[in-house]
Length: 358
Image 1 (cartoon, one colour):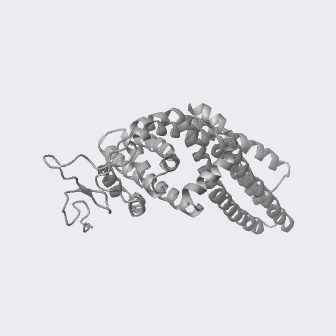
Image 2: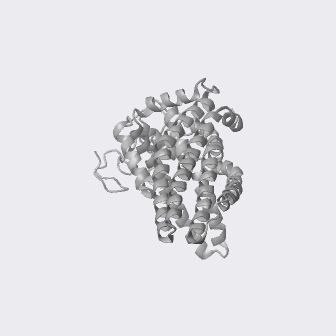
Image 3: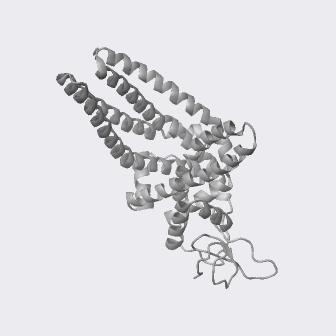
């Protein structure tokens, strides 16, 4: 299936995400109305400021609870359905029920999913920072490179924001191994195919930025006109105006999460699933990523402990396999469980990190 087709056929998840986002906005508006009403009764700028701080805090808590738990699990179910659609060409009849079942089947509990997702996201951010450091070094030597790197960083930041969804999709695809190992494999597969995958992301990144700006400005104007009807004065008017801007950002963010992010996620996952099954990966890349990111290292170690790789196992597409045998011998190398570095069989200590080999 093409990305547009998958997106349109999994629209129930986009609408559900929008409902969650708007729920946060509605709750936030109700709380704001109550607190601003209290400030208006007291006719005190100090009380108005305190009410505004309380509103920000309560809204942040509500947003975290709804989007961190319900939103994350909804995203996981969406990824499960997308994976099924891309790999089999079939859309389940009851998408939400299917997604919920697959998430429970693959991760057993939501806590395991949260751990996997956070480790992947953390690893991606650390790898991104490593790439940015290289760009900063280049910027110091090449005139005009600073501006180019700022644009590149923005692009990479947006594009890499969907790696965790791709890796999560790979955990649904590889059911024969632990979620931690599949997620680690997924990050490596992404790293190996970064040129193709980021080229695909480039087609839609600019659209994302433009749409967010347009939506935010449109909603801000509407909220601003609505608040002017109440004719607030002094600092209360200033607070109300700033609140209108924040509410506009919340609405724009809800629309972005529901539709723009969903389309980007589908587009990236379609490209990812096209290359993932046929990608042959080696532990050489594991070693590099472990050196760049302690989060990836933790993810890799958890996968090794839960799903040890048997020595001499036959090569399979999409599965991490040892590199070619040592030239001139039939002995296969062994790999460090700490950093993933390749070592000669019989070595007592890892040549990469120095840890004692088991």
